[in-house]
Length: 420
Image (cartoon, rainbow, N blue to C red):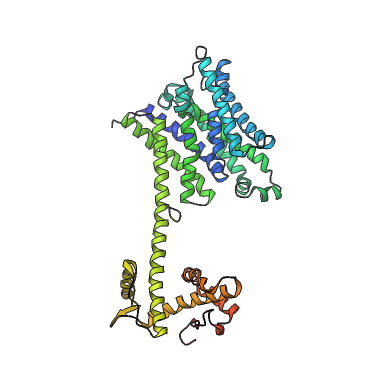
């Protein structure tokens, strides 16, 4: 790939600035579960743009910007009206509002095609590649008009966020408590809608409706998989949006595809990667957790089965299936089991097995006393919970029950410690 010239760098800078502003407001939308409203606004600005151009405004100019913002605010207002007075759920009202307004815009574009210079395709996909050709002079430097608009909006959004950060944080997670504390939640919501409108309109001409929706939701959703603190979600979402903009544009240039579409693809791939690899909630982490739990259950079941056999004076049972065989091999490696004339617990293995059986019988005894469960139905729930009771819970159960009573089947409940 040849060296990037100034035009390409201006384009990347514009896309990155648009992405940062959209990711900033998108983080609040995602946290408050209002992402669909961003989708609505990004589509519903079309009639405002068309009417502003029809009135003499030029694409990218202040009149068109004002018309788009007005249409976005009308969308938010109409959604609220449909919810309050028509009884529609928020998502249904949003869907009605934005599809209707977007359809009106499409009708206006097609009906007035001879009188306005507006391409419906650019509305959806943007004209990111042509951003460097529409410039304004700033200190003698020709700067893309879209970059100036996006940078101005980003600066305003950052300043507003810092100014009311504590209030935004409170309202984002518990609006009712914030309202009870005297915080003007309604004003904050209106401000968020206005901010969403500004960010959407600033990026609409450059990246189009489709990428605006992607930049509003995907970076924030991706960041939310990686961290749970909003103070970290916002900068991480902005960084993801900026990185995806640069990578997507370079990939589109390399393969000769639409830049906006490629940026959205990169965002989607990033989300998939985060969904797989995120610590704690990622697919890989959850799978590893399930495997680890299954392994622990298998080895503890094997220990408990051998302990019960010793208690009954019976021959040690053999493993059933490949999982128990593997668990037995693991127990041997841990020094909890030995094989001499059959499987035998070591002293350490007997201690570990005793605690598993103690957990099981304590829970059976508690269920038998406090829950109306037939005697022959006590074993399955106790068999599962035995793997999750720690020493503190066992102690509280024993204190509540009195271990001298034994379990509902008349068996002794093993002591917490050997000889106890």
